[in-house]
Length: 424
Image 1 (cartoon, rainbow, N blue to C red):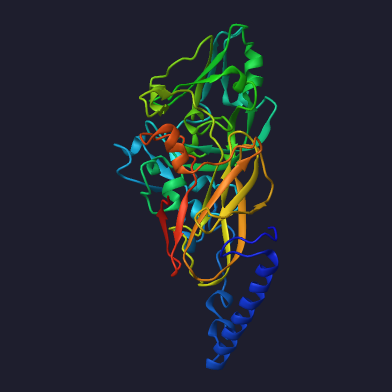
Image 2 (cartoon, one colour; image 1 turned 180 degrees about the vertical axis):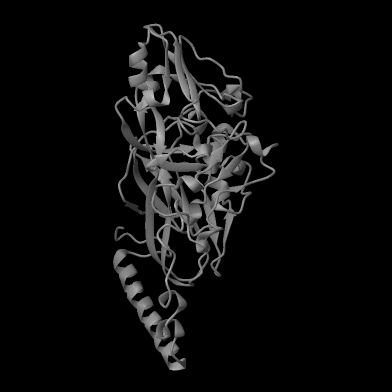
C-alpha cells in the first residue's frame, strides 16, 4: 500500500486512523453489550468445552467441517448438453491464499472422469523418436522428480461474459481455474530417453478416456517446463484430475493439460485430435478465426467482495482481495479501483509470487458505506496490462467464447450486496 489515496479509498495513514476509529466503535458496542447483560458464549461453559470431541481416527481421510459445507464446486446445468462433457467451477469467492484444494478445484471433462489404476496404467512414446517406449507408472517414478506450482485455466473462463454481464457469482464468471502444486517428471526427460529425431517439431498428446482429447504442443514448449505429474498438493491426483497421471502445461490453456495421459507422439507437423482443435479458436469480427492461441494472458478478479461474498459487517475497515495470474510469467503488479476505473491504486501482493501461478492480492481501505464499482487489473512482468472488455471487443468483436481476460466489474451497493455489471 502506498500513501497515494484512491477515490473513496484511503492512504495507509488514513487507513490506520480509520481502523482506530472503527476499533473505538467496536469497543463501544462491546460496552453496550455488557450493560445489557453478560454474553453466555463468554461466561457459560459450552458443550464443546465440557465433553470429549471426536477421536483421532474418526475420519481417516479428513474433510472440511460441516460449517464450511457451502464451499463446493458448482455446475451450470444449461452450459453443456451432458454432464459427462461439462464443467464445474472452483468456489474462488470462498477461498484464500493461492493453492486450490483438489476437492474443490474445477473440472472439465469431454467424456466423463474414468477410473484407471496405477497397475493398468501405460504411457507410450512413439513417432519421430529413436526408440519407441512404453512406461508403466512405476517406471515414471524412477525418473528425477520435480515440483512446480501452476494455474490451470479453461480457455472459456469468463467466456459467457463476452456479450454482457450474465452470471451472478465470481465462482461462475471466473471459476474455471485452479492452482496446485504438482509433483512429477519433466516431459523433456522422457523425450530424452526416447530420443527425438531432428525432424520432430510437434508433440501430440492424448488421454486414455473415450474422447482422448488429443492436442498438439510445439516441441519447444514440451522441452521447456511441461510436466508429467502424478501428485497434486502433496497427494495422488484425484480421479477427476486425471489419476494416476496427467500433463501439466504451465501458462497454456487448460484443454492442453491432458488427463489420464496415455500417448506422446512426435511429428513434423501439428496433428488434429479426434475432437477438432477448431473448437478452441477465437472468432474475429471479419469472419476469420485465430488459431493456436494457447497462452493465457494476464488476468485478475476480485473474489471478495463479490456477488457470492457480499459485505456483511457494514461501513468501516474493509479488505478487498482477489487473484491475479499470467501465462507469460510472474505478476508484477495489481491495481484496484473502487470508482469504476476513474482512479487506480496498487494492491499488496501477498505471499510468494510465482511464475505462471496464481498470485493473491489484498487492498485495505476504510469503506464509507457508499456504493462502489470495484475492479482490478493485472500487469505482468512483460509489461502486458489486463484490458477492459470493450478493448477486447474492439479487436475481436462479440462472438467470442475463449480467452476473455478482460477486467471484471462488481457493483457494491450501500447495503453490502454485490452485483455483476458492465460500465461504459
